[in-house]
Structure formats: C-alpha cells, structure tokens
Image (cartoon, rainbow over all chains, first blue to last red; front, side, top):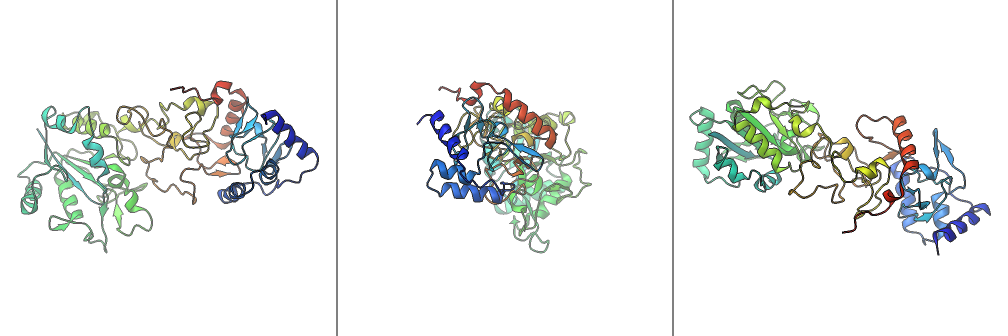
Amino acid sequence: MSDDAIRAEAEDLLKNGLQTDVFPRADDQTQIQEIIYQLQNGDGSLKERLVVGGFTLDPVSHEGLEQACETCMYYLVHRRYCELPELDVPVEAEWSCRLWRI
Amino acid sequence: MANLLWLQGGACSGNTMSFLNAEEPSACDLVTDFGINILWHPSLGMELGDNLKGLLQSCISGATPLDIFVFEGSVVNAPDGTGEWNRFAGRPMKDWVRELSDVAQFVVALGDCATYGGIPAMAPNPSASKGMQFLKREHGGFLGTDFAAKSGLPVINIPGCPCHPDWVTQILVAVASGRAGDLTLDEFQRPKTFFSSFTQTGCTRNMHFAYKVSATEFGQRKGCLFYDLGCRGPMTHSPCNRILWNRQSSKTRAGMPCLGCTEPEFPFFDLEPGTLFKTQTVMGVPKDLPTGVDKTGYVKLTGAAKAASPQWAEEDMFVV
C-alpha cells in the first residue's frame, strides 16, 4: 500500500473512534522503553501501532509543550512520515503520539 | 635529546596501541627526528627486573635526567591506600609514580584513566583508582591540587579512550622541542589546541543536525546521531572530526555515536539502563542539551529548523 493509502486508513480509524493510549505520555526513559517493548512484541498491525503509540488527530499539549508530529524528531516533513522504527507509519503534521520527542 | 619514561598503571594498553599507530610523526620519528630518547616503555623497553628497577632509581636520584614522564592508566591505591594491588618493579606502582613525578620536567597523563580515573574509578571504584591530578571532575587526584612538575606546569592531561596518536605525538614534540610555553591548558588541564572545539566540529552530519533530521538506526548515513542514538558530540570537547582517526574517519562519520570519552564523566554520564546508545529525554526534550543551549531556546530552534528542512535532508545523499 502507498503512504497515502495507509495514512487515509489510519485517519479513518481515528475518526471512527479508535480508542488509543494517549496517556500516560512517555515522559522518561522507563516509560519510553515500556511502550517500545509493547510495540516490538505486538503483531505490528496498523491498528495496534496507533493504539499503543497513543495517536490523536490533533496535537496534545503536555507540560507546556504542544506535542505535534510536525515538531517531533522522528517526523519526515516532506514525506509526512513517522520514521521511528517501531511506529514506521505515514502521519499528518498536526497529529500527535505519546512517543513525541524534540 | 629529551629523556622520556612511560609507565602503565590500571590500564588496558589502549593508549599505547594508539600511540604505536602514530604516523605523522610516528613513534620512530619521535626518536630519529625529534630527539626523544625513550628510556623505557612497557611495550618497547628492553630492560627487565633489576635492570629496570635500576633505571627507575637512576631517574629518581637525578643520575638520569627525566624530561618527560608519561603515565597511562589509573593510579591504583587499593587496598587501604597501600597500592599493593598494582605492584611494579618490586613496590607499589603509586610509589614510583609519586617519586618520578617529583623529578620530571613534564608529567603527561595519557587517556581517561590517567587523566580522570576513567573506567577503573567508576563507582564503587574497588581499586581506589584516581587520575594523576583529577578524580572525575574533582581536582586533586593522586598527586594533589598543588602538584607542579619541575617545569612549573601541572600534569598535562590528554584524555580519550584511547587518545588520538596525534594528540600524543604533537604534545610530546612540543615539549621535547622547547615549545611547552606555547601550551595553554583548560580547566581540566587539557591542551586547548585540541580540546576547545567540540567533537561535533567538522562532523559530516552537521547539516542534519541543523535541520533536525535524526538517524533512527545504526548504519544510516543520513541523519544526526544526537537526537535519538545518544551521541554526545555537541557536548564533548575533542578534535575527533578535525584530526581524523587513521587519517580517514571518525566515530560519528562512520555512524557511531560519540561516547564523550574526553570528558570526566565518561563512561557513565548518569545513564539509565539501556541508554548508552539512546538519547535520554525528559518530557520529550533531551536531558543533555548541546553545550550552552537552554531548553526554551532548543525547543524554539528545533521547531523552526524542522519546519524549514529541505527535502534533500531527509534523503540519503551518499551514493557511493
């Protein structure tokens, strides 16, 4: 599937009420590793990556920082893509996930 | 002719290995072209047993002038301050170090262990190791804060794990050729000529650093290693990307994150388990920021740079 098709599928899932693990955010190394471990040991499906990653269609503000994909270190601006190997998913700039980091 | 004596304490010989790989000048050039007379070296010295002991005593008595005393490895003080865990030529090494340092014109500490205590001095430091004049960041070390060699200079520290052969040979040549007065040392007594710039200075990934494009896995040739893979290049003082290793490359050029081995905290850096090659973050922001940058500035800069990043920065531009 193309990036656009996967992105559209992800958007549909989120718009149709897919409940994702938005909180707790990955504030420290232990929390990051727990989430990464879940992703590495899951089935790798798009749905699971969205749920475990805690994706939302709008930026989440946390501890005074707006955590949008467009400012995340894993985001490729021109491809509109999350390059974190465990997520590896096309996204939109205004989306957000709990593995956000700058 | 400058007499040089080289001893090892709590060491892995890594700095000796590095030194023996020197090319311009080589270890042989130091002898033939720069007038350095190597009295003894653990890998090169011919004397053994009583002959070696006699040579060391000759230096201490002044019968053999000792111009440069090079020490590699930590000074071992265990057990109970005796230094008996590291005996050499019939007595604790630390006793030779003290007496030889007192008579040498210049004392040079090579590598992290001799400089700051290094790996042997990591907590709980069972060997009670110290660097020659530092224990990690704490000034003093084995010889004490007030120590100065006969030339008036404190211990010249050349850290690194190992230190680059050129850092060693250039300092030895400067000292042996009477240009020690040109040396200026920083707060950790490192020659400023090598340790004022950062490891990042000259890194081929600087364009990716500027546009905030991260490498996310080893082996990627694009992307900066600081953002995700734990690289300490922006916070570490060394010329690793100005004076290349083997005249070819550096860790970061080859895709290996800088471990910060020229800084006193190496190798620990307060790392959480599993973060040796993972940039630690707090609330999504790197715990250790590039030297001189604060969190607010970093967040602003990163957001702007990310938005401005060109497409080529996201692609692998290296085609060979």
